[in-house]
Every structure is written in C-alpha cells, then in structure tokens.
Image (cartoon, rainbow, N blue to C red; front, side):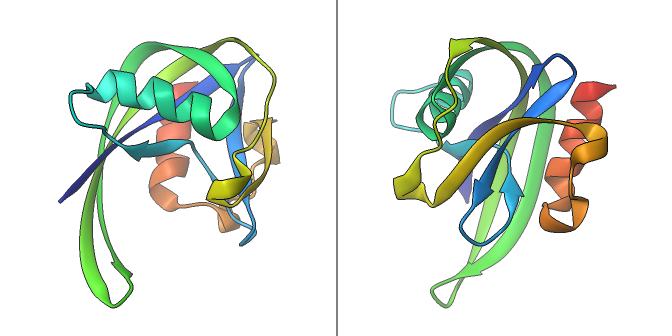
Length: 127
C-alpha cells in the first residue's frame, strides 16, 4: 500500500489545482518521506508541486483507490488536509508533468477532467 498526503489549498473561496500535460486537473499530493509525518508531507508536496507555502487548517479525510502502473496493480491511500495559502507565487513543478497552477472557483472547475475523489474533497473543504 502506498501512503500519500495532499492539500486542498483554499484562497478567497477558490481552490488550488495543477494542470497536467495529460489535460487533467489535480490537487497537490505525494508520498511520505521516511521520518516525515503525514502533515509534513502534505505541506511539502504543496510547496514542491505548486511553489507556495500553505498552513494546514483541518484534516478532511482518507481516500483509497487502486490503479495499474507499468502492469502492476497498486493500492494507494491518501490523507487530505484543508490548507490556507500563506505566501508564494504559483509555480507548477514541470518535472512532475504539471504545466499550470491556479486557484479556481467551484463553478470554474471542469469535473470531467478531475478525479472524482478529489472533487469530493474540494466540495468538503468549501462547505
């Protein structure tokens, strides 16, 4: 099981999303380093993938899913945190395949280009 942590970063009732080269919109998330807490991993991943510093406000919950990568079935568990922008300029992590990073209002989200579980976490954070 792969354990990851991620952030739903909110600013002015808009959510931070990363646009991938595969034309998908995703939330920043990633693996937990050795000796790192889930909270630390979420904050670090937001910074690495989007270039901003954010503060955790609350835990949103876990998401579980399975996927196939290089012919292998993998299981992933992600703990999502609601976060608030502290500072920084958006800069997508190009080496991870991100081509854009921006804050979008709920009505501007293209749900068809997003993972269902991430849309659920955004809805929860904005509620």
